[in-house]
Length: 158
Image 1 (cartoon, rainbow, N blue to C red):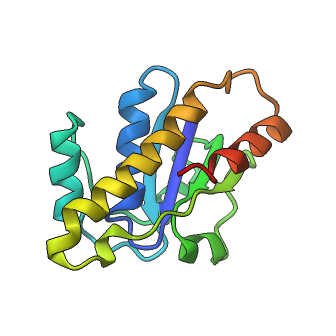
Image 2: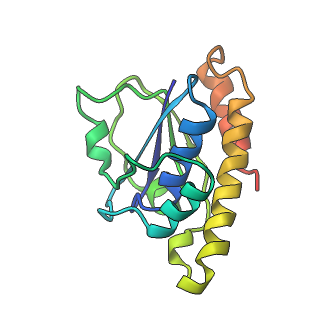
């Protein structure tokens, strides 16, 4: 099952959730992240935190959602936005009509540098809880309506 995680800058929240899904859901899901206006770099605190948590960051990069709208791109089963800007933007049409959901989280990259540890840890913990809740479900056998309902419910977990 392929999951695309979107945010505007693709430097923090979407990178965190992509890594969480790929670690915790290995073998069940394959996650990708992208941004509508990618910053071009992964926030350094994202890399620090992911490293501390044992995630492989060797392929982490900030990329445009345009990469996932091509015929060569993997077909997505779910598209999850993690910031308000991306949720309200007009997104490209994804092949296969994936289920869409919004899991908004405060932007840790907006925090002042002395607050980075706390801000990034808070975002990581919320996204980790949501990813775990999704991975507890029999997502491979759920229809789109059931999946959509559960994605919306999970997006409220803090």
